[in-house]
Image 1 (cartoon, rainbow, N blue to C red):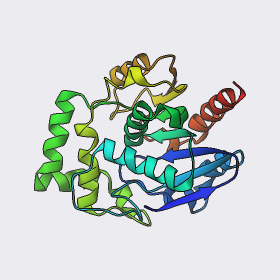
Image 2 (tube, rainbow, N blue to C red; image 1 turned 45 degrees about the vertical axis):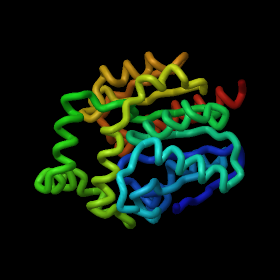
Image 3 (cartoon, one colour; image 1 turned 60 degrees about the horizontal axis):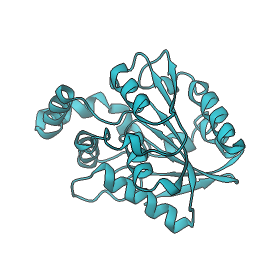
Image 4 (spheres, helix red, strand yellow; image 1 turned 30 degrees about the horizontal axis):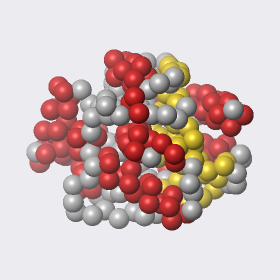
Length: 240
């Protein structure tokens, strides 16, 4: 499992989405701005999830629960008992599974372009696309930018990651989330509908919802759309 630590202070764990690897936020002109803002105050742990980047890509089915356990194992290795978590897209599913099973390990959750389940019609369509040869090629084409990363996933590991959220339904977990939670989602997100966004926010006790006029990749247009509410929220949690 490949990871890096940036900054000093309270632990803050970043969990990325499907196919992303950490050089996308740690290297290159302007790319580190997002990470540096957090690292000014926090000890930021960033890592490549199973199947992405420089982490192993075992040829077995992946699950959200499996990746949540990977994350806990990493924290155990680093001697971190409790941390803030900022999780994006598929990473939000990982964070939810982790927070429900290990509430004592989570100081707060910031969920970005987040979802807790894939609705049935889309689940069926995406599931078929990931499983048939022609469909896999089409799904990879739609995520071409991920394969242009410095350490891209393999087509096989990308498909295994892609199936993990389809087999995850977090509805029963939402009420178990004890940590203060902020959700920052886009109103024009074609991957996460407003119905799912509101179901997620309504299911987590006392969750705060911030809506942004943007799509699933709105952070690529303006980092502050996430940075500003996230840093303000983390400061409120720390102060309390």
